[in-house]
Length: 468
Image (spheres, rainbow, N blue to C red):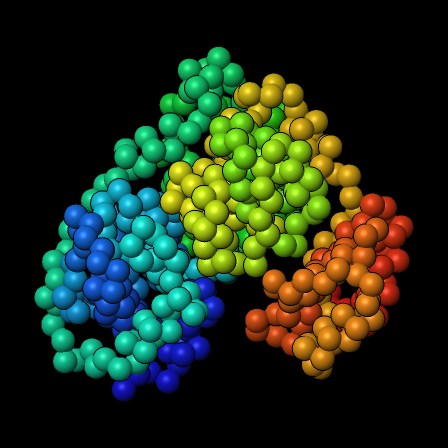
C-alpha cells in the first residue's frame, strides 16, 4: 500500500515536499520504481534505442537529506530492473546533459530547487531530457509508485558512477566567446551561488578561463544551510550580489537558484535586469546565428520582447508559463533560445532545456561582442511601464476572468494561459494560481501613469490584493 502522504509530494512539474515527512526514503524508493517503470514504457512506446536505453542517470544537490534520498531512489530504480549511472553532486542541467551525452533513457535529479533547506524532491526527465510533468508522464510515475510493495523486490539492475565534469565543461565552454576564453576580453563578474549547486558548478566549469575574473559569494554548499533562500526572484536575496557589483566595479552580477537551472542578472550599476528584458537583449545574437528563427517567450513578458524579435527578423512565439510548455514550444519551432520571467532560459544547444550556466555564458558573450555596458544594452528595452506580477485573492477565479473579458468587448482577447487582454495602449495577462485561490496580474503600457491607473481599475475587478 502506498504511504498516505505520497500524493501530497507530487506537484505539477516535479516531486517536492518537506523532508522527512511527507517526503521520505519510502517515497524516494517508490519514485525510483515508478520512474523506472514509466521510462521502460516510454522506451517501448517510442522505440528509443540509445546506447544506454536501460540506464537512468541520477544526480543530487547539496541538501543534507539528498544522500539518503538518492540512495533509496537508486534502490527503487534497480529493483525494477533498470541500471543506474550516478553522476554525483551536480546542478540540474548537468543531469540533462548527461542523459543526452550518454544516450540514457532518462534521469532524475534529487533537488528542491529554490525551496528552503527543509525541502527536497525529484525532477524526472525522459530520453533526450524531455520533461516529465503532470499530463506528460508524472501521473504515470505516481500510479506505479502507489501500486508497488517495496518489500517484495530486490535490486536487479546494476549501478555505476561516472565523472562527466570534463565533458560538461567542454560542451559549455564551446559556447563562450573566444575572446573571453583567451583573455582578449576580461570581465569581472560577481556571482552569488546561494549556497547551492552553482557553488560546485561554477568552479568546475569556469576555473582557468583567462577572461573571467569571478567574485564568489556564498559558494560554500557543504553545510546544507542557506544564508538567504536560494530564490533569486525575491529581490531581497539579490542584496549581496548588487553590493558586490558596486564595491568591486564588476561588469555585471549573477544570482543562481539552488539547483542552478535559473539565474537573475544585475547590471554594472546593480540595477536588476528583468528576465524578459534580458531575453530581448539576447535576441540579436541568437538571430544573427540563426536568421529568421523563432524565439520563444512566456506570455507575461514585456511587449519589448516581441518588438526586439521582429526588429531582428525573427518570429515571436508566445508560450504558456512553465518549463514543460516552454520546452515543447522550443522543440516545435526549432527556436535557438527562449526565456521566462522566472529566470529560466532555454537553449537549443542544451536540448531545449533550461540552464543557468548557459545563460551566464550568453550574457558574458554578448558583452564581449558588444563592448558596451550591460545597462546600455538593456536601456532600449525599458520602453514600457510594467506592473510586475501582482496577486489578487478571489472566491471564483473562472467567474472573475469571464467578467473581466466581458468588461473589455473592444479589446483583443487570447486564452493561451489564463486570459490576455490587448486594448492597444495597454495590455495585460491574468492567470489563476495552480495551488491557491489567487489570480496573478501582469500589466504593461507605454506610461507609468497609465499602468498605475489600469492596475487600479483591473485590480478592483480581480479581488483583494495580496502582498507577498
